Image: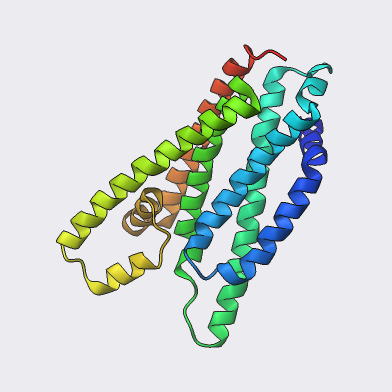
Length: 237
């Protein structure tokens, strides 16, 4: 499997280098804004999509299956590559946040609320959702059709979450929450998953919330990879 992961890196290396440099440069000014949360998430998803696009462009998938490699192993290696890309993105985002926080600390300002551990857990869960939805579509229909179907499914989840979040916001406004709580919420990235994880951390504590989020993420990846293996068996090259 390590050889297949190395193949992903070799095929997508030029694309990865350019994208990583753009993200690092963009982090310098954008890390203070809550939108940076979503920018980093889109970047991680783009890394994953870029690997499948490079495979499609160079015919690397056909080459891999000319070797004595099982389709199950190909699926596992692509999930590993996607998760490594997510870990790299999160590491860059956290490093940028730490640098920004230290700069703010020197001038007596508070650290960015969006760089807290509970927000990072929400990021992990959201990226897991993206991986779990897209890769089964890719392994069933390939890069072109799979990309469209996966993107539509992810967009549908985002829209549904947005509607639910708006309904929750209306309830909170009607309840006339204290101004300090409203202000704290405004400094967080908007979204149903983010607000749910942050609320769970406040109610249950960070260690238990982390265990729940990581456990749920593991279950999603396991179920998604099994679905991808079943779908990939029927894929023709």
